[in-house]
Each structure stands twice: as C-alpha cells, then as structure tokens.
Image 1 (spheres, rainbow, N blue to C red):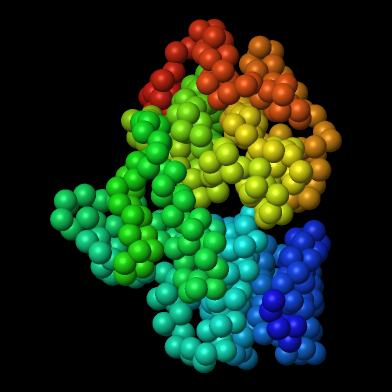
Image 2 (image 1 turned 60 degrees about the vertical axis):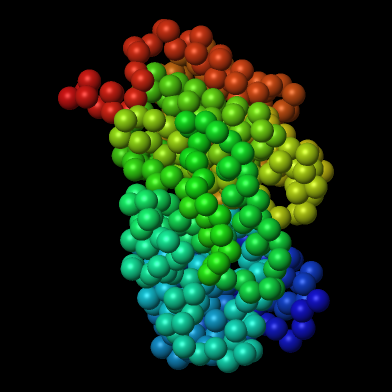
Amino acid sequence: MESIEHQILIVDDDPGIGQMLSTYLARYGFHSDHVLDGPACFDALEKTNYDLVLLDLNMPEMDGFQVLTRIREQNSRLRLPIILVTGQSETDFVLRGFELGANDYITKPFVFSVVLARIRCQLSMHHLGIGKDMALLAAHVLEKGTVVGKYQILECVGRGGMGSVYRARDMKLGRDVALKTLLPTGELEQGVSERFRQEAKLIARVQHPGVVQIYEFSEVPISYFTMEYVEGKALSQIILERRVSVAEAVDITIAIGQALHAAHGEGIIHRDVKPSNVMVEPSGQIRLMDFGTAKMAASATRVTRTHDVVGTPCYMSPEQIDAHEEADIRTDVYALGVLFYELLAGHPPFTGSPIKVLWAAVHQAPESLAAFGVPQEVESICFKALAKNKMARFESAESFAAALMKVRAHFQSVSTIEGVRSQRT
C-alpha cells in the first residue's frame, strides 16, 4: 500500500478517463485530483504541492505540449515528474515529449498495472534524488549508435505500453532487426517483466508467414527481444491515405484471419487486433504484430477479471468490457470484424470518446455499409463477426476467412495492395 501523502494531478479533458484513473489510484493509497485543461492545471499546481502529474496531450485551449512547456519553466524533471498519457503513439510525439521535459510517456489505451509501475518508478527516483535529466532520458530512449548485446541501435520506430521498438543492426549476422525493450520499472512491478517475457514466448510459439518471427530474448544488459524487421506501412496509415476497395478489404481480412488462426491453434488470444498492429510489406504480404496484450486461452478468464483495461476501445468486444465475461478466440473474431468494417467504411463502426465507444459496442448496432458500395453478402459476413453475443459470431478466425473466400470470386482478383495501385495507374 502506497503512502497517502503522495499527491497526483491528472490533467485530461475526458472525465471518464480521469475518474477511472482516480479510482484505481485510490485503491493503491494515492490521493489524486482531476482537472480538464491547462488553465485548471496551473491553478491546481499553485494551490497544491503535487508529487507527480499525469498529463494528456489532446486538450482544448492548450495542448499537452504547451502545458508541459509552461510547467517546466518553473519545475525541473527532478522537482515534479510528469508522465504523458495519450493516444498519440507516433515516434515524433514521443521524442518531442521527452525534449520538452516529460519523464515518461504512456499510450492509451493503457494497462493500469503498467501505469502504476511507471508512477512508482518515477516517485522512487524522485525520492532517491536522481536528478540528471539526460540520465532519465537515456533510460527511456536509446540513442542511435547504442550497442545492446550484439545489436546496434539505428532508430526508434515506435513505442508501446511497456517499451520502445527500435530498428537495430545485428552486427554478427549483418541484418536489420526490430529490437523491443522493456521500459525501466526496477523491481517495483514484477508483473510487467513477466508480461514482457510472456509476449516473447507467445510470438515464438506461432510459426506462420503472417506473424512476425522472434529471434532472441535477453535480460542482459536490459530486458529486450529481437524480431524480424518488417519494411512497409501500417494498415492504419494506408486507411488514412486512401480508400480501400471491397476486394482488397476482403483479401486483407482473409490474410489476417489466417494469421490469427495460426495463433489460436497455439492457444493464443491476441486481444488487440487493429490496423496499427498490422503491417503491409511492399510485396503485399500481411504481417500481424504486437502480442503485448496476448494471453494463453487457458488464462484468459483470470486476466480479464483483473479490471485492467486490455485492448483498444474501438476494437474491444462486449465480453472484454464486462469483467465477468470470458474472452476466447471469438474475441479476436470481433476485433477482426471491426477492422474489416473500417477497411470497408474508412472508419470503425463506433467512434468518439472511449466511454461512448464502449457503450455503443454493448448497446448499439453498426450503421449499414450499403452507402459505401458494399454488397449485402459482404455486409452480412462483417456483421456476423460483430455480433454482440459471441455465440452468434463465426466460431473461429478460420471460418470467418472461409466465408470471405467464398464471396471473393465475385470481385476483381486482387492479391496485394501494390497490385491495386499498379492497376489504378
């Protein structure tokens, strides 16, 4: 139990996020206040000596970067630790946050045990008097040229809930790899380290061309593992850049479904299937990535009852929202149905604040896809995957993919995204 004297300020324009964080923090002995914007944050800081600030980026009047800059004009990293908590996971946002003085950076949706570990870590360092800003920065972002084992860091390419991902060079074999590191938590949260090991183990179990392969796991000198480095674009970026044809959406969903089926065959539930976790190589090969929230099917019930937020709201199934429901492979079928809908419509079936999206996932039906030129037989397949009752969905990702393969004959044969581009030019 934490000492009640620790005071935390939550700055987030979403009342639901603020209330949820305050409730969780209170369970562990932290006192917290929640404000909705920058001016209210500055007013609170003048009145109370807070030990740490959890700061959102997307807010009215002033964004989080502006708020961070103003706070740092009077409070150093050592004097007042600030953790950015935001849905912006792009590398540029992460690096800018650290450059402006953030102590840590957590992406939404978050797992609360990770947030708790980060808070404890920052408070511990603050208590010990670790005051070198660059030392804190180096502990979170490895600079270009840093050598980790036999790998030399080339660039940071992403950041997730537990760590950062880098493109690195295997100096012995002369190839580029993706190197994922665990953010430092010391010995404050053993569950975080175990989750990191579990991710590596689960990836290693799946042998399929649609799933990235792991090379090595090590905890010396830091916790990290290396995987295939995938050239290409995230599917989320492709959806933003252009309209995806129905035939192409069908082909992509089939490929992801087959990769998911391979994972399910090993007893693994991904639990965070979404476009940003799918890479499309220049050849058109689809690669499913990021098993950071995945679990073995046998342990899924225990995990979903910890009351942690697991998954991304837009892609979470009704049973993920209800802590008393059991998640199984049909949970991934639902997420794949959301992804398929997004490919067809250009947006997920439900949008808005996390609370609004989660409510809609349980109570509302998705809008028809007819306005987007989607044939009825394709819409029916998509909506079956999106059934509120998991018993009404496809029983597996394989059966979902099989249903799509039957209707694929009705469309122009398109096997890769690059193939579509060449035909349009």
